[in-house]
Image (cartoon, rainbow, N blue to C red; front, side, top):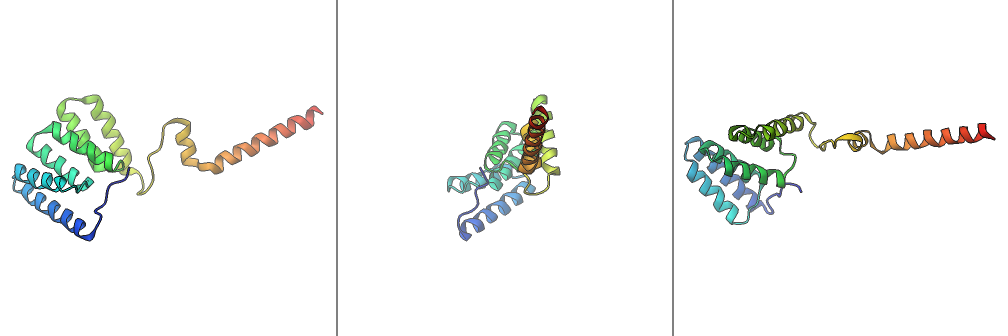
Length: 157
């Protein structure tokens, strides 16, 4: 699922205003007020990854790691390629003492950050190899296999 974008220019302007205001409140360490502003935006059905990301930042600054974890997970549901949310989720896991989740999530975040923009995550194993090398490689292997079978047939006759 991709990140949901604001549907109209007014929605986009509203999201930008909410994000700006919440960042001002975060800088002033008025975490509860920033959380309230973002929560009101979500109540207006503006379900946007950037709002959840900022909400996670406010929760982590406030020390509410459980809610920060939920906010970053929501960002990743809306935008699975959001490397900063993945990185911040790793920080939350580390602070919670969830070291296995921390290491796995942190490594994923680093891989995501190094990937060129627009390139999808590589699947593990053979399917990942095929994803990287595309159908051209598969066609080439099929052709080589057919040629090998023809040669075996010709030599056997």
